[in-house]
Length: 140
Image 1 (cartoon, one colour):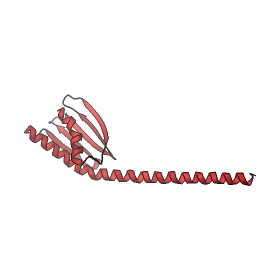
Image 2: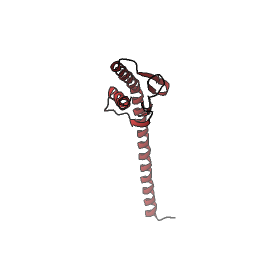
Image 3: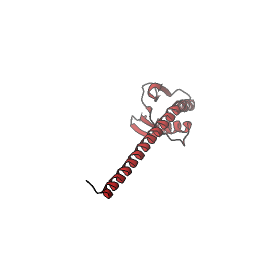
Image 4: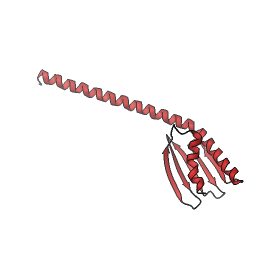
């Protein structure tokens, strides 16, 4: 049996441990709620980002004075593909995955690219669409 002063010390250490465990659990719950909220906001924005991608493609086609780019959306997968030409190459596919946009593309020379970036709250949906497409359109 431990002396009373040692028992009290062990109990205080146990209480401190319990406090740390509770704080860690509360932090984890808060982080999960924040992540779920950020994902929900990203999903809401996706619709307007795709609309902005369509506008960017239409502007490109207007500048080319012919239909060069076609936009195909797979809404159930939060995926949009922009195809240049009839044969499907070059292409750019963007997929929303949580708060990230994952892009895969192939340019006019057939060079494949893949990248991802975090959907930023300080960049509006039109600017996000332009950011997605601009480098790829420059290589068409």
